[in-house]
Length: 98
Picture 1 (cartoon, helix red, strand yellow):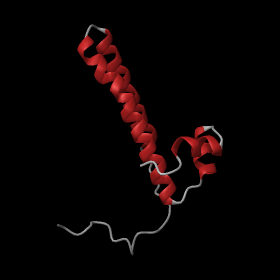
Picture 2: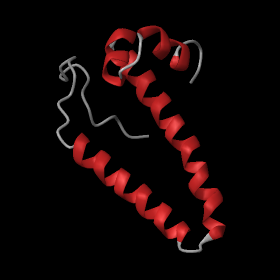
Picture 3: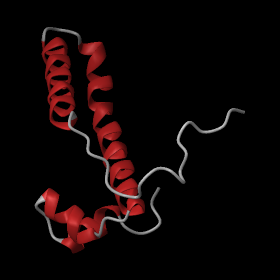
Picture 4: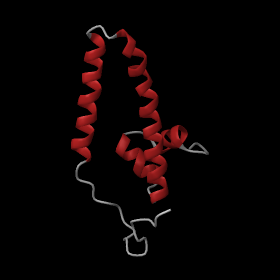
């Protein structure tokens, strides 16, 4: 097993500046819309796969929130970005969920 590439002792403990998030999110939205259009042209076999993507989106959101919490973000900070209350964020993603 190889050693990790990141030396944690040398890595500052602060939020990473990620500049491509908007472009990446736009790409994902375009891909999802294109998939919907593809199914709409008669690819009924792909409908189940398209619907299953909502489960993947839910899992991705949970992963993101758990990671942000581990990184030190509060429920209030997360909720603020989502336009919901702190309580609503905690109810949806809090507790012992993975």
